Length: 114
Length: 112
Image (tube, rainbow over all chains, first blue to last red; front, top):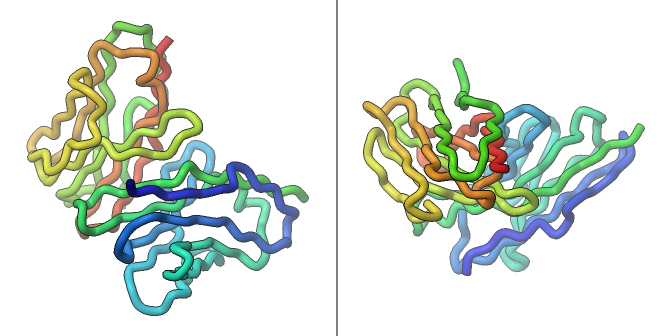
């Protein structure tokens, strides 16, 4: 079955520290990959996406993600976290061959401490 | 440009009652999607409209859920009668291009 795994339910980091949020997926082919962020009271905002090409993609707010085909992973990174990054982060996959629906992970809640 | 809007932001109803959620997509977006997140679980696809037609409703949990999209503009999702397990956050998204989905803030539904 198709699935997206975000193994970390909750992460706490200090402001200024680096961040890596993990995402693994299980699909036969290379799907389209996304990271979304949801701040309190807000909708899901697209941080970045990967369709093809360079496996390191840059997004908004200083985030980047690396697609690793051999590991079926698409981990999100940021070198220096800001207090405003506290939010919930969702990895999503669109298989492409089964319609336009997205499959999401369970989300990772990020707390940033001063 | 206005984003995807959803109404209400929060609804509390009793089991057995009816609730209607509304989504207004970004103007000009032909594709409209409904998703649901049950607490602690992943966000799950419910259905997809292309204009006023249901393209894919494979994620609709049962026949207590009815989605409509009038004239290819806004969409409503009705739950009748509501059950406790229907509680969660209902997200709407719209897109013009495939895989460029823009999400609304969600409607938090609580069934007591």
